[in-house]
Length: 244
Image 1: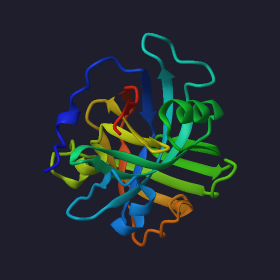
Image 2: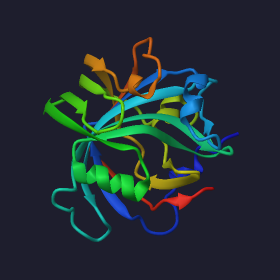
Image 3: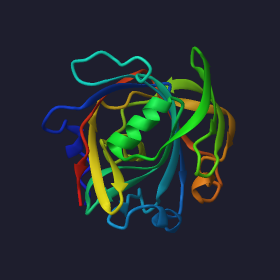
C-alpha cells in the first residue's frame, strides 16, 4: 500500500524557493503502462489508479519566483509553462511526478531550472490571453536538438469542485508533493508544499496539440479529464536530494 498522506505535511528544513502557480489547467488521459515504461528510469515505478496509468498536459503561469526572505528577481520571476507529466513512486514510497518536458517562455527560467533541478525544461515562444474565467494559451517549442511541439488550448473555468478526498481519482491526480529528476545514472527527488488544491470544473473550447506525441507517445484517444486551478496557489520548493 502506497502512503499518499504523509507527504501532505511539509518536510523538515527550509525551502529554497517560493513561487506562485496561477491560471492552471490539468488535462489527463489514460495511457498504457507499456508506452510510458521506456521513458522513465527503471528504479521508479509507474503509479496507477485502479490499474490505469495517466499522462497529463498542464499549462500554467508561474510567477513570484524568489529565494526565501528575498524579493522576486526581475526577469526571472515569471514564465508561461506547459508540462507533460505522468505519476511515479519509489519503492512504494513518496508518490510524485515525473516530467517528460517543461516548456517555458522565459529563457532564464529554462536555464535556471535545468541547472538547479535537473529537469527537462525547454525553450518555447508562448502567448496567453485571458478575461475573467476564460483562457487561451498558444505555444511553439523552439529548443534546439529536441522534437518540435505546439499547443493551442482554450478553456473556461466553471463551478467550484470540493477538496479532493483521499482515495479519489482527483486526489491521485493533483495532491502530489514531490517531483523526481535524473542526471546520468543518478536519481533525485525534490519536495514541495502548498495548501490543498482549490479546484473548479472546466470546459475545453479549443484543443490542438503535439505535446504528448513529441515524446513518442500515442495520441490520446478520448476526451481529457479537466481540473482548473480556482485561484493562485503559493508553493514552497525544497532542494534536490539524491535518492540513488
